[in-house]
Length: 153
Image 1 (cartoon, rainbow, N blue to C red):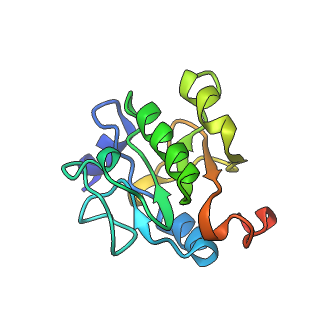
Image 2 (image 1 turned 90 degrees about the vertical axis):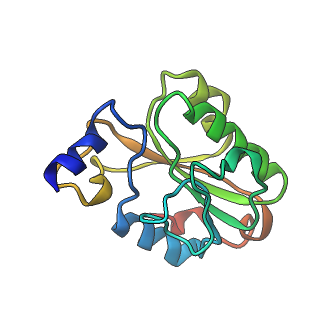
């Protein structure tokens, strides 16, 4: 088990399973309709897209949770999240706080940014991630006016 979890803290994978506690707190506020980046084993919503289904080619509707692959693909997922918000969806993104990257300045800065305190423990791991994390919220659709930003942890 430890070996399997350790891969989530290396460059061998770009997938970092969403921490259950963080998702539960956010879901209590947002009531997510879709998990845009999941596997059947770690999906946080009954409706989700897997890597094979390619979320980048699908329409996202409602209130969307997105914990994207953290590799080079992250820019494409952040662009998609932003574009889906323009089409009416509210998209909450859990991303590494990488303020020195092009994708951060091109997309993340267009949303509401909430820096998370400390470092998250992804996928039930016993050690914290080697990077800080942030939530980026692209407001759109039904929640844009209904949820006050101070309600978000």
